[in-house]
Length: 578
Ligand SMILES: [Fe+2]
Ligand SMILES: [Fe+2]
Image (cartoon, rainbow, N blue to C red):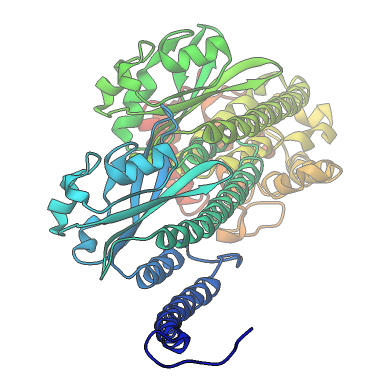
């Protein structure tokens, strides 16, 4: 081969030069291209680094809003766009439809988007959410899917738009949209990047929802447990009912809660209302529903729970209660309260707060509460029965003692009645009244040890007999001291013959040293002694007995107890004949 170079015109050297010149042009082009590529790669690398630094929101306590705000800010930066938003899907449990809430927005006028939402399928974002696929348009305003209302409202001039779904586990949790790319139209790279970020954001939204769901459940069960403990910490019927209503309102986050109980005699439901003002309570108490009537009646009949989110259009709704109280029932959850397989009541929560609706999970926890209410009602009922049996037994014992003295027949019953009336007029709490009742029934139990000669004597007692009689107060206390559960009533028995001025027996204590139960029993005891017929005198009139009580108020008797009793006499509550 001849490798000599001929640079003369037409020689091989000329072609080579030309070839070299051409090659160097291509080389320069190639270098330039490589330079562009490098810049692009650098830019991509920078974008990837930025994305890599995005938080994942895996911390135990994070705020989804501020994290997604941060995401949006990064998205706008790396897609070189002027505005954008992240919309999250909110599903409507009622009909399965959903909507998209503007969760974060950035760019001119974006603050006006706060609280906005669009329907599934509405506009480009709605279409992306319903189809689950990305979408972009270089001429948004003329795009057939464009919904111009939002742009008009916020006064933003949209040119091009890119929108991607945020998908997790095949579900669309939201969409990310960016508007108006600066410099050039959106590219495939932009779309890939945004889709990549949307995937991460979706994981974060799912985590947040799961966490919120767990937190809500923990909070809910915590409340349920507290309320159940509170319910079961009392055995008093009224308190159980009040607490049940309070618990229903609190647990269900409702405007009103109510408890209806079954009246087994009439097969009706009546409102056990403990809350609200006096007028409402009175009106509600008058309402009675037949089993099967109204929503509560239906629940009682079917022994099934029900959630009704449009009460006014439910054919079962009994409008009478609303009419009577001018209350507007919007939605309600209603569950049966059952003991031993029988419906004993119905628990209702009415109008979920903040215009929300009752959910299946509300129904579930309400049923758990109803179970607790049923247990508490049953316990209170058993306690009442036990207490009544005990009181009846004590009463039988007292009457057996009385039988030895025919002239004092019925004394215990009457002292019990008068003592209760005084206590109620003095405003004593139920628990104290119950103790006082026992003390009143057993106040003369010590007479069991007094001989028939003294007890049944047909005339005034001599000093010795009187001294014997006086021992019944201390003897009664001694007898009862063998029953530890009755320790609380011993002072009432021992001191029921003390006088307020200290001239009584057995100890001669005075004033406020005398236990309150004893002070009350003393008034009741003396009133009965005066108004009943004795072997040596006829019974005195109520007027006379009252005037005696008044005369001795502050000396023999505790004046508050006398005042309370006279108040009761004046209001016609005291019938000596019964
Ligand atoms: Fe006595
Ligand atoms: Fe007595």
